[in-house]
Amino acid sequence: MGRRESIPLPLNSQKVAVEDGGGDDDGICSNDDIIITIKKPFVMDIRDPATAKIGEEILPFEIETVPEYFLKKAEVELHDTPDRRAQGLWEIKELVKVNDEHTKDIEFDDDFLLQYLRVRKYNVARAFTQLKAFVAGKKKYPLMFTNFKYDKIVKATNDKVISMLPWRCQDGCVILLIELDNWFPDEFPVEEVKRAYLLFLSESLRNPMTQINGFKVIFDLKSNPLRHVKHFTPDNLYLLYHGTQECIAARYKEVHLVNLSITFKAIWFIMKHFLSDKLKKAGYFPQHSRNPFELLPQSCLAKAVWWGLTKL
Image 1 (cartoon, rainbow, N blue to C red):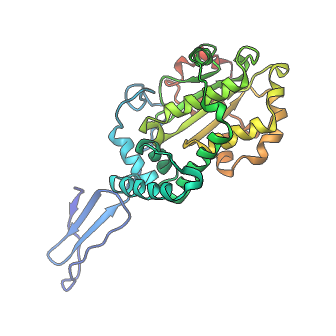
Image 2: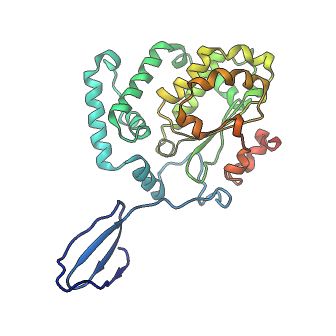
């Protein structure tokens, strides 16, 4: 219950109830003649990356329950409540049933459908559109979803091509690190990279904490052009964008591009034309690139020396 205090009001005033904004922290002002209930809008407290501490604001990548702070964040940012979840699941399942062309004979788990409802803030029509795009992508690129090889996935991790940092940001985001210079296509073909990236994102998104908070991505773009440039075809670049933005139900809160290379400058001209305005705003791209150490928690990145980020 919020603070209680008296306010001077005319004696002939009638009892009224006034609600302002949303949230659950009520302030009540009263006297004998009037009761005014003011619902104060909920505002997420700011978690400063400069002072965030591991074990307090900074939580591990692997976390089994969603803390109360992030449940409230989901309600405020994504309109995620038990009632909205139940209603949203019912509505999207009805769309799945009647849309035979895209979703015939496919049975989706509730947890999977919730990913799409959350990423689209319970706009069921948009969530279903993105779900259909995922189904269509799976049909168009079947090799990405089959023939996963354990040794190749392990290699992607051991070679530090794709890594999930062990600690989340203070705002709950997963930090995904991609190091282009560690990728040797002769040993780790581009199709295996696609499978590994899909697997990393999909497995992380099984966790409600990741669904709610999303990803912050660091692309370390130092590279050998002779090794990589031939793989940055328009089709692969479009797949990277379309698959991550319009098919997989992921929120991308920040994208940091560091160690800009000749390779990246060559592909940037192509890729920038089909990036969404939202992604451009979330990204730290060449024209305003910044060191992620300035923007992400230093305690969270403390082990990033292992990934070579001290050279930034």
